Image (cartoon, rainbow, N blue to C red; front, top):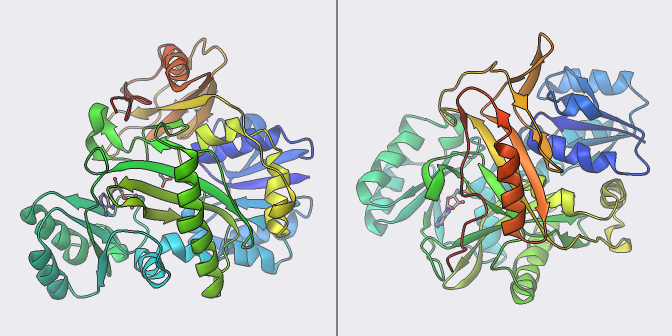
Amino acid sequence: MNVLVIGNGGREHAILLALKKSKRVEKLYCMKGNAGTAQIAENVDIDYMNVEAVKKFAAEHSEIDYYVVAPDDPLAIGLVDELEAMGKRCFGPRKNAALIEASKAFSKSLMQKYNIPTAEAHTFDSYDKALEYVRKKGAPIVLKADGLALGKGVLVCEDLKQAEEGLKEIMLDKSFGMAGNVIVIEECMRGLKYNPGEEVSVLAFTDGKTIVPMITACDHKRANDKDKGLNTGGMGTFSPCPFWSKELEKEVYEDIMVPTMNAMNAEGRTFKGCLYFGLMRTDKGMKVVEYNSRFGDPETQVVLPMLKTDLMDIFEAVTDEKLADIKIEWEDGACVCVVLASGGYPLGYTKGKEITIGDVGDCQIVHAGTAVKDGKLVTNGGRVLGVVAKGKDIESARKKAYKAVKNINFENMHYRTDIGVKYRQG
Ligand code: AMP
Ligand code: GLY
């Protein structure tokens, strides 16, 4: 089979690396890709948000048998629907199901309607009413812009002043653009051990009939060590989650995963693809923080390397609604991904810095924001590389990853030194 993956980042490189292991995959393509994807796939220089351009490419390339739409934006605008209408086979939810990520107001109302555990919340399209509610509830309180905002549209406000400023930023100043026309205001969840609670990302394959959780992962969202600094797309991940257990898995499967799949079916929005559950362990049990309609980035970088089953078999089983027929198996042990970012990220940073990669042992270097310029590997984004290491446990994997990091360099390289340390204290 010839398979095209849509997207440019570390997640897409990780998906391609997993597909490369498939016995059934002959040739890989990536639209648009980066310097890493170019090593294993043919990069296609087309803007995937330009639906007409993608359709034209698909029409001219009948040799491509399967499309994987990985990022949230093309899913939200219905790229899967468009490709399917042309008779193409795809992995990824249709537009009406991708709404579970594209609108936080929708996902919140879904959880409320079907009793899926989550923080109590109200949705507003009026600034005045929202302000009145925030003042009534007081802090801490969480503000969420309704639409897609590059993972930045959530403000956890510790005091009322912060909440009032945040509300103005989202709804009046439109810092997140149209995403802030509607706001979800929710209770700040309390953790069982820490505040806020411990978080875990659980990705799941689903064909709308069956839902199969993958191994768990934890993301470090803040830019700096000890969870200081601004929120980012993710500075590193590790798998599995240290507080995960068979009991939690059962609770999440029965109370959250299956009810979510059924709820989407009942709404006429059958979800087929990878459904991402951002969960928090709270003093009142496991609750949903957010849904994503896709693989997480950089969660995918630590989850897929542990997959023993052929990923292409799983993708096709989802497309054909035969997920119940295959057994999905995982390696034992742990995996850690340390993200190397451009200094300044998530704010301003410069691109085009030459990258040198020395001895990285058996670590996998996953490319995110990279390009080749004048024959040299250069930085081309905020998150540049992910250094992925496997080990018998998280400690040995993180040691291996950080040893490799020492042999990689570019000007103003920034990374966290505590990936995988989260929750170790308790
Ligand atoms: P999200 O983009 O929805 O994942 O939110 C970003 C981060 O904000 C989450 O990873 C949590 O750490 C935090 N957060 C979101 N909602 C809540 C909530 N209701 N209570 C406490 N923390 C939250
Ligand atoms: N790592 C969080 C996300 O993919 O949204």
